[in-house]
Length: 148
Image (cartoon, rainbow, N blue to C red; front, side, top):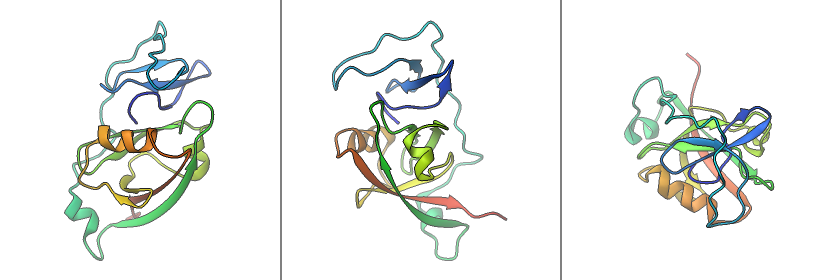
């Protein structure tokens, strides 16, 4: 997701993500702090999506996507996932040992709502901001592709 959100393991440390998509290891010190990047700064990762998906496709009755709801409670480091995309947003990465994985979030799910607010048409920075500035517990509705 945007700044200061966990994204995946690297050398045992939780990864954090800059708002430009590059990732670094380290812990957040506060809402306006900028942790020092580790020596291995990763470039902007390629999208995990297999193909582009529109909001219309996600909302199509009888379509190939099913709606699921998850409650993710952040820990001292964050929520453990990365959001990317521009309406609709998708889950780009999930830290295997983080709160999002424990709640059931998976890569390639599309974010429909955050704490009851429809976010299908919002970009990832806005969705990230809603999560980062909201309560410690976030209720997310997502759309997941059904198996063929």
